Image 1 (cartoon, rainbow, N blue to C red):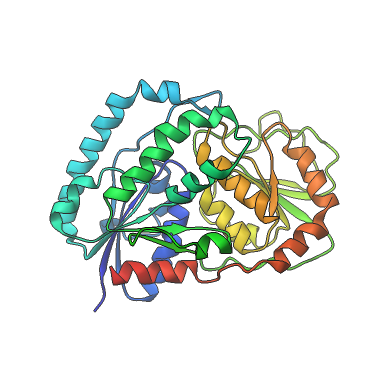
Image 2: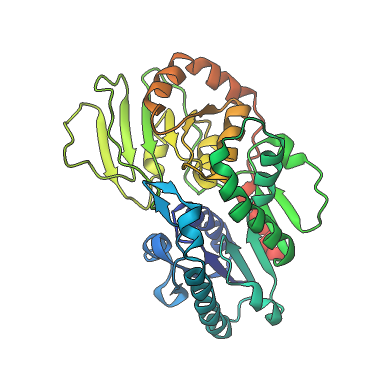
Amino acid sequence: MSKKVLFLVNGLGLGNSTRCYAIIERLKKLNSKIYVVTSGNGEWFFKDKIEKKNLFINEQIQYESDNQKLSIKKTLFTIPTIINTIKKNFLGLIKIINLVRPDVIVTDSVYSFSGIKKFNIPIVAINNADLTVDYFKKLSNKPKSIYGQYYFVEQLDYLYHKIIPDVVISPCFLEKDLKKIINSNKIKRVGPIVRIGIKKRIKKKNKRGAIMLSGSNFGVEINLKNKNQKFALDIIGRDKPKNWIHLNGIEFHGKIKNNIHLLNNIDFCVVNGGFSALSELYWAHIPMIVVPVPNHAEQWTNAKQIELSGAGILSDHETYEDKIIRLNDNFDKFENNYDEMNIDQNGTENTASIILES
């Protein structure tokens, strides 16, 4: 008997939508009937992937930015608006649940679901706040700029998911984190969640790279300073700047829903610290230069995990071009690091199984 699965997907960026769609692809193969509630970028992403009658749109909760940086101070002033949005979305969600009558609810970074426990429908959360908290506690030399977001967002996120969902699926990169014994029956760790079609990188002599920086409102303009790039580059998610001077080998692809064909053709990637994008690149053995959104604790800890694994380099918006040169000067080292890793291949399948067993 097929199950009806209702996904609640945060639409601020594209990472939550991408990894939920990877899971949805697997569930569809298992004859599950899928419904999605989302907002913002999520509406744009899902509108041609989910039947119109099964796609529901709510209001997006926004974090405030200041000069493309996450601003906790400005966000604090919008708390009344955030609370009102959560209340409004909750009332809409009640109507959707009564209409759909799902067998299981899957949530990815959506916080309007606490009151729906009264329906006695299993709630499964996709959330790696436990991993963020673990690494924040044990890593040294943390930038002071991430402390505010950590205590205001990540700690609350972690505590919320300890209490509300029935099951928390926590994706992780490293084998040691996957095998770590967790003092909680609720948290189930899985390997990287990856879309169907992503392929392992094939080693080749002539390198092609990508710059893929943020699908949310925290992105900055791509304006390369080094006009003598030695590598072909795909700029994914950004339109060509108005004052752009054409450079051979550099292509702007704008905001696209399916970047798989581009990812399958690159050898390295400059990318923000969103967990979904890093998961796919890590699984595909693609060396990375990770540029966390400024002031964002989770993205910084994600970037440090990639650096500690030997899969890439931590950077910032001012120096990532220099890091491209450094990475390529030591490319053999990153390839060898990947060759020695034991990366879990079944994160998406295991996630789908946990959902259906809930």
